[in-house]
Length: 152
Image (cartoon, rainbow, N blue to C red; front, side):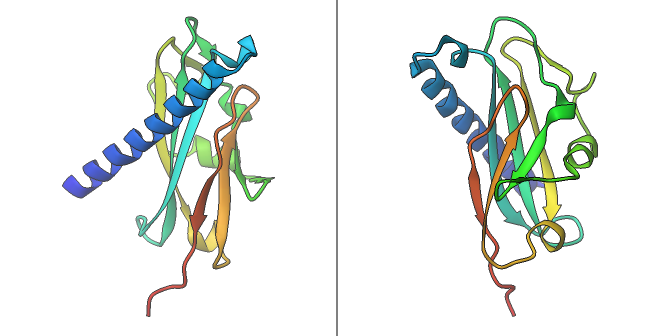
């Protein structure tokens, strides 16, 4: 139980660092529309999962504006190797979410959640995969996860 808590805490901290890095980069930009709004962070790591080996993806969405922002969860797409997953709506709609849903994010608030994707279904080849998260209102950075050969 303590390992799971520590793992969630480290994933959340990593996501927060990524988002803050993106926010800092956006604030250095000369384009005013890049300075505030929604900013997305993502991390990925291999895990045993509940019943099979999986890639655990942690998501963090930050509203750094002074007004509530629509997150439009119906437009969220998980992208693997440049291709939007056809079942993104199922992935994001399945499992627990915040009270009141993901529709609007208050000023300064965050959504922080994770999804486990079975390796057999989404990462069937032994190679590196590039993963990102996007919507009409934000775009995360891209992370790379390498699927190794199973241990004998």
